[in-house]
Length: 314
Figure 1 (cartoon, rainbow, N blue to C red):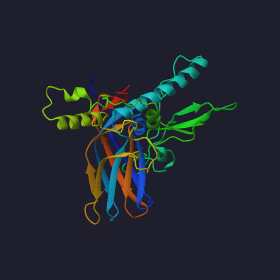
Figure 2 (figure 1 turned 135 degrees about the vertical axis):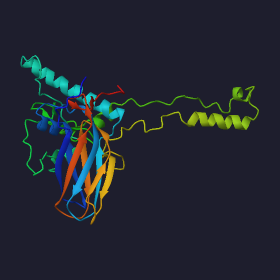
Figure 3 (figure 1 turned 30 degrees about the horizontal axis):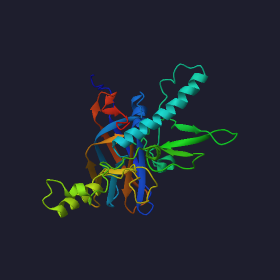
């Protein structure tokens, strides 16, 4: 398929650093901004390829920047697919009840990166070279309708990709990675070796030149590497932020804009699950403005390089 060259792939916006303990977090929904500036719908359920990001800071202070995303892992893909299927099932049931044949061309499964993304005011808005902003269209983030015990309306449940959910069984927030962890099949020990290190049959082995060595090796077989080399009952990216597990967005690039000298920095490319990016800025100056220009890799998804999210582990 030919690349659509009539696509604006450069996303430009300003971050305003309002620090709490010298840190501030800023969120970009790539599909939302692409949709607004190109006047065509981009699905959020894609892994988007970023070519590079350039940062420009007019302030003289030194600024540290971390560019973060959800984990680019098979479990993130699988968690998204499981969550998408559940949402689509509810949508199709309602559409059928309304006598509709489909959900319409603009219906899409749109989620937040993490709980902070829901309420944080630092959401990227496209600007031109003079700071004029692009208008927004109808971009509503998806919800599950969760039934409650007894009579009453179902609970509106917002959806995040990372960290933890809240309020079950009457859910108010669902985390796709957290829910995936709950239904995960945990591997069992393999091989499941019985405790035979002292048996007569081990001692009778014709290859047993040193019985103590054979027993020591058998002990190792029974206890070492019989489970995977990762925490089998945990999904990284799920759980309570700040609790010692990597459930906050993961760093994919970082840089420093030096103070008093050249006030620019750039980072290379990376892949963004669901096109959701969190940029963390660290410095002491309140109200500092940092310009950001992100370039997307050209490709055959409406002019940019992107692939559908899908669960390789299901």
